[in-house]
Image: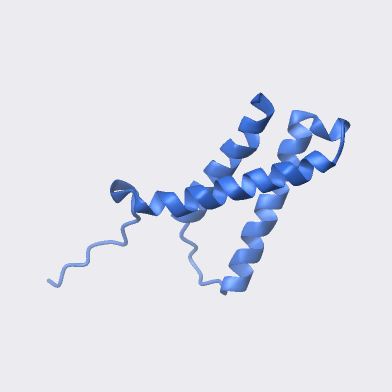
Length: 95
């Protein structure tokens, strides 16, 4: 049970970072998706190594990558619905 908390927690943190990160330059969608997927895969493998599951079987890396990805996706979808957590982009008044 404890070994499953790490990938879910890491995915939730990544989801928060992906939602709140404002890049100073505009990236094409394909590049942004590629970067996000690479980060999810890297964090999933890192969690597998950190928990020591790789000593049993590297197949655990696939499970951990999936858990990180799903937790990241759920967090990134739910977080913008929170009214006090929506990103603000400065004052939009007309005057």
